[in-house]
Amino acid sequence: MRLGNKGRDQTLDVNGQTFALRVWGEEGAHPVLAVHGWLDNAASFEQVAPYLKDCFVVAPDLAGHGRSDHRRADSGYYLWEHADDMNTLVECMGWKRFSVIGHSMGSGIASILGAMNKSIDSMIFLDGMGAPFTIAEEDTVEHLKKAHRLMRLALRTRLHGFSAPDSVQFSSVEAAVNERRNSIDGLLSPASARLLAMRDLLSVGDGYRWRHDPRLVLPEPMQLTERQACDFLRQISCPLHVMLGRQGLFAGPEFDKRKKALPWASRVHWHDGGHHFHLEAASDSLIAQINTALAQNEQGPVRRIANE
Image (cartoon, rainbow, N blue to C red; front, side, top):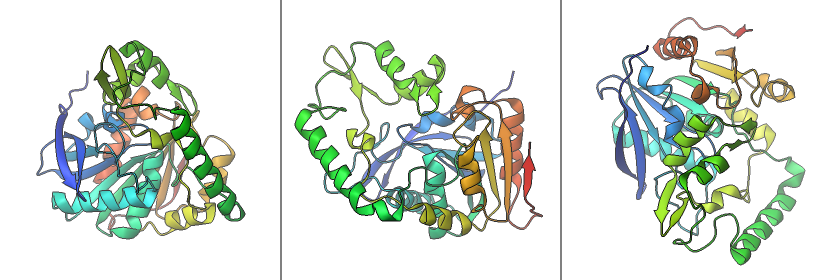
């Protein structure tokens, strides 16, 4: 059985907001920023982070997610806002050089962070290839109009968690876990869903409700175009390891659509599993591969490798 570092909970003020952090390892070790995906939280890395060697892993709950503060009503949850938060968080931590692990939407945030901060030694994408949600340039106006209509509808009907903050959404933890099992590529295992749900549940009255901001389930009025998402991928200058699930979101045409945008310093690795393969079944080989990637610095030899 593998022995790992036990995780600890901390908080940090970033841009005037309180961010909940899950951390592993010793502070003097190599810093690793772990960025979770859409509607997930820091628990996404519970099966991976404890086994990263000589690393100090910091996994924040992104704004509006998990136990972190929600943004003000006049602000939003754009990828570039998350990236700015992460850049400020790194500055608050006093990191001079660091690595980034991004899952799903976290890989899109990481790709934008790479344009803001040139102190990144290496990046690892877990079933992600940059911004996950994009629109066609000609759809910008219609998308904004639709997002506006959906927000007004949600506020008026009080659906999707827009009910009063003390109202009950679930009668039991199990009911919440069962809902959280729904993933964009199928069902999460009960154990994985429980890890994510328990960090996102708040006890109210005779039941529970999600902590996360209900605005997260609605589309942002302005999204990156596919060209912009690819531009952010191309500008990544540090070694990039893209680890994808064979049954994940990039098992077909989506990989072909983005692969030409990967920078030359990229390695692509395929693993058994779906979109949350790192949480569902973090194999010894996956852990070893991540450790090898984190040990690589940008001065080392790099070449594109497709590992089938």
